Length: 99
Image (cartoon, rainbow, N blue to C red):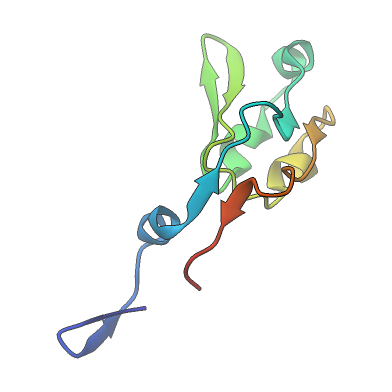
């Protein structure tokens, strides 16, 4: 909650996420998609389940941007194709700054 004019107000999820810090590891991707398996996936649940909205459908292919990943593992749970998912290497990933 944020204090403003003597009153506490709730921050929207987008505001809370903007406070967090993300250190992206350009040498090692902690989530790797298998393009062939993603193409044959019915429903593509990762697109709808990712709370950070990092999975998208572009020209029939699922894309993923690891910058902004909350490391929650939701995609790993809902993916019927068993995507490659690991925590980022030490010093990389998300740093929660509030809450």
